[in-house]
Image (cartoon, rainbow, N blue to C red):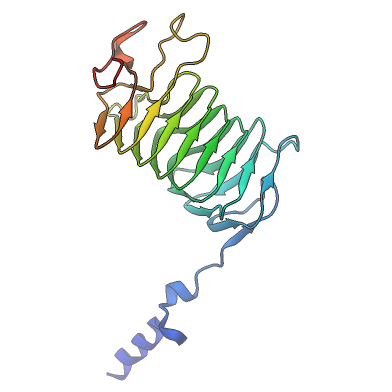
Length: 241
């Protein structure tokens, strides 16, 4: 009984906190561009302006990390706003903005909640069987593509508007031939402003290898079956298909 009591005492520290929580590393404050050693939990306490400073990425997150933007803005210029290394989950929590970067978020497994991604080349890029979950977020005016992922994209109460080529593109690869694109109470519209659209490439709000699932109050204007070549076929699910 004494041994068991000792174990229970070790599990809970003062204030009733479990040992794991009490001993967890404190969150890391990000104060400089490409700050090294950021993993676990991190947060911003001011805007991070890295345009013209030579940093390839404004924020580099190593491994499984949760980043809290706390209402601030990240700008990188030609590089990534946020680069998530490895294939662990990379979670970005708003409110906050990632803007004016070559790629807003570059990751293999990205979850974004309440984040505005504005005026980037690519809003979100998810390679190596990459997955993206976007919730209560907005991606606007991506000059190339709003979201590009190899494996899956799920949008919930989110908006992707004004992308240069495709709004959301799920392309697959040899390692992840099964793909998925799902919208729930979300909007993907006004894609295809690039001059190459309709001339040498087909552009659409939703471009995928398998038929997207458009649920609830979701809306889209155009879709494109990536298997069908140029100019190709649509999926018959959007308002202008």
